[in-house]
Length: 141
Image (tube, rainbow, N blue to C red; front, side, top):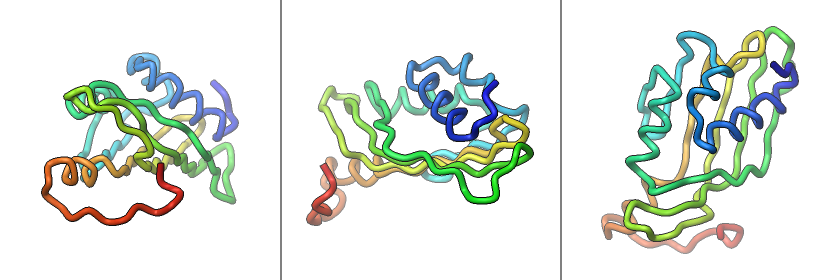
């Protein structure tokens, strides 16, 4: 297993986007805490893949940045990864530019905490006509 926190998280994301939750589990500590969008607590990485399968026809991450918080050590590191999601909604409509931020806590080279935030719920509300349309920031695709 790689010890560089940035490389470890980027490899984890590569594997989970295949998706191969069984291979991704190698990166997780036993009893890792996973909190997905909307505050959904999950106990296994397979639940993340199952959740995404119900929300999207398919989805991938376009990684833009991976930042290791200052003070990281071999014992513990906090890593943020951000970028945009792209894929298809369940009805086959394509989407892109859906912002996300993931936060990971690593201990001894294993993910012990994983938190995921993204704009999907807001975009679904907009598609359903349940919220107002606002001008998007110019940098939003």
